[in-house]
Image (tube, rainbow, N blue to C red; front, side, top):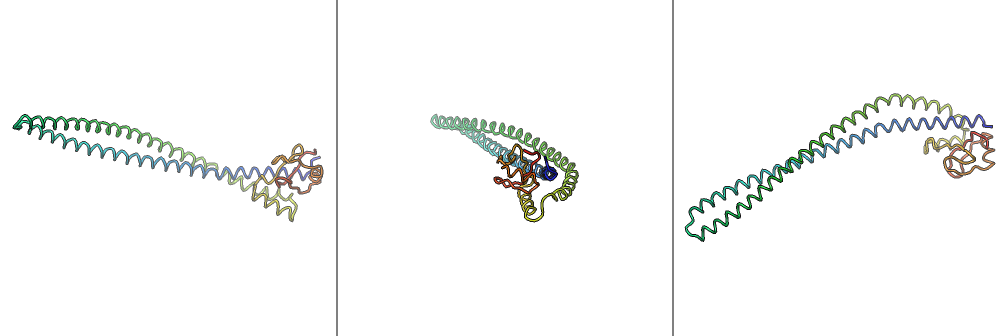
Length: 237
């Protein structure tokens, strides 16, 4: 039959699992907030980078526009020179220079139009990034509110469970057994204990010997020979 000690071990194991769940949930909230804030920071930086890119594009537009106006003035001068040409040869030379200048101007105009298109696309992308920042900030606020709302309850649960565990782990024998229990608990949390089912450790699937079963039925403190966890038995095999 299952011993009282086995039930107490099982109860202790359950309390340790509940405490671990509560502590993990409590720690998870700040981690979620930190991750969300990091995403907001990255999105903010993306907006800053995009704004800088837009400024560079606008600067290129201004520079090319100024260059175009300068070239147009040069074409005007060539037109005046054309009217003042003193020979057919000079006239042909000036015409060739004007044709070359106009071709260059057309190419420059295309470049300006392309840059303006890039500015529009960059502004659209900036708007998208700003919307993303807004959504991420709202998500961060929601996570923060959720974390703060459950924090008092979790802290209360942790305090209660800690008290209950301090009472429940009295089932662990004093001396070396208690020292081993505390060491395993500090290192493994609730995984320091393992139930034996079907004659096997549920943590590592190592079989318990007949002598192990007898010792557990006699409420002895027993460690799994493979994984080193504290074993307990609920039903007699």
